[in-house]
Amino acid sequence: MLTISLLSVNVSPAGTVPPPNNPPLPFPLGTYLIPTFLTTISTNCTSNPSTWRCYPYNTYTPSTASTSYSPLVWSITSPKNNTLNLEISSTQPAFSYPFQNVPLELSNDNDNQLSAFTFTYSYRKQVIPSADITGTNAASRCYYNNTMLSVRLYSTAQGAGGNVTPPPTSTSTTSSGGSGPQNWPYAVEYTETINEAPECYKYVNGQDTNLINVASGTGSCGCDYANYGLT
Figure 1 (cartoon, helix red, strand yellow):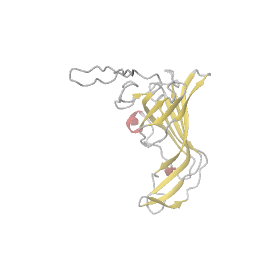
Figure 2 (cartoon, helix red, strand yellow):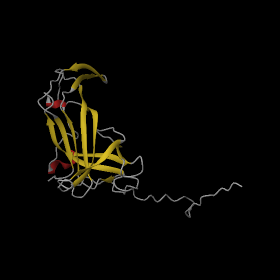
Figure 3 (cartoon, rainbow, N blue to C red):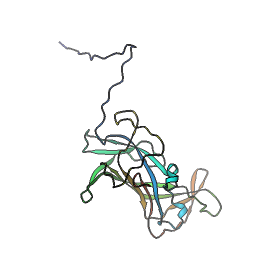
Figure 4 (cartoon, helix red, strand yellow):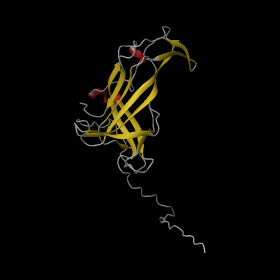
């Protein structure tokens, strides 16, 4: 005889099924707001500094905290449902990095007794120059084809030896088992770097057209972001 067991469901007095009580996920699994600030801009990879830009285009000072604030929302998951095999994905790219399921590694610095979750990601960075590079006041667009994103999400309160600066505006702080992102609780730093000249084009009617020659510089271009050591 085939026996079918029915699952019992608790029903509220109003006749609706109560929402499930999701337990918090083990750290670092979950969705996080990464609240960082632009701290440094380097333009040495290009002969024309206007062709390299770093969102949100203002470096941090105490008076420019709101205009140098660069939040990201990233999710950390585990395909094997444990914290030994981690992947990270961008969920709300703003300027940004459309990466999915990039391996996340735990890196230990024994000399400084620090540990951090780290990853790198290579992508094609697009830049709208801050000045005319065509000589005709036409629109233009540049690409940096092998830009490297390098990220360190510190995993302990020691961070990188500095005080973590909270974001300048209020944000959701629900648990990782809730519906919204929580702030990453420790220090964060990441960089965009490249040592190649840009590939720039005149931009007409939504299309890249004539190639614009922009010579290489003498070093690397970079954008540095952090949420600690800010005064």
